[in-house]
Image 1 (tube, one colour):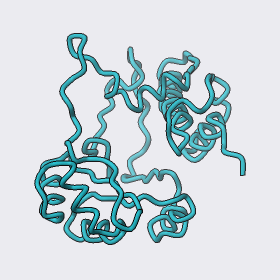
Image 2: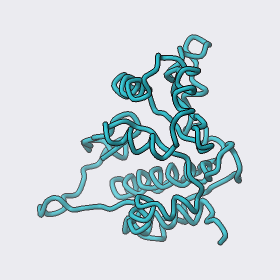
Image 3: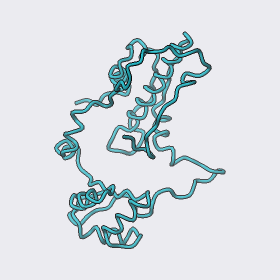
Image 4: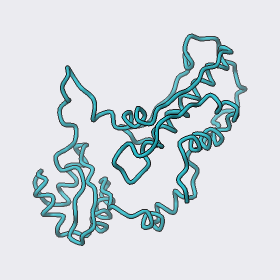
Length: 222
């Protein structure tokens, strides 16, 4: 099956949100995959989601002012936004290391790989306690040599830690969580009140006067 283009992904997002398809004519996308070393089409995901958000702002601007805008997103620029921490500079220098020393990929005793997330103190301390080792990458590797990847993933999940065994695409499709999310839409929009729609007043910016409750923590949302 051919992977969808960024343009198709934007169109799908836009239609799923219930917006008029005519607005898609204002979108211009440039660049092609691959732009980052990944098993996933990160450039496509970055470009499509940024373009959809920008188009939504543009449409809101049109509704508030009667003036239209075009939306142009380059894939390379969008991909940079998706890992902007790699390019951040403070006074011309990279900031201090933000990853915990033992975070990352490890090969376990069964030859399978897993990833430890230890960038939050309670996750780090929990992983170290479960492994029974000191805060050192070599020590963590020695400890994981005695584990099977999926068994350690399960043991970590049972105590509220973030550890993920690496799987092939087919393995993920057959995994319970993989099957569960395969049946879900990319997103859903739920109406939480029955009040009538009120027109927004004129403003100098698309979202002026609009308050948003953001419940995300780092990059994870509810």
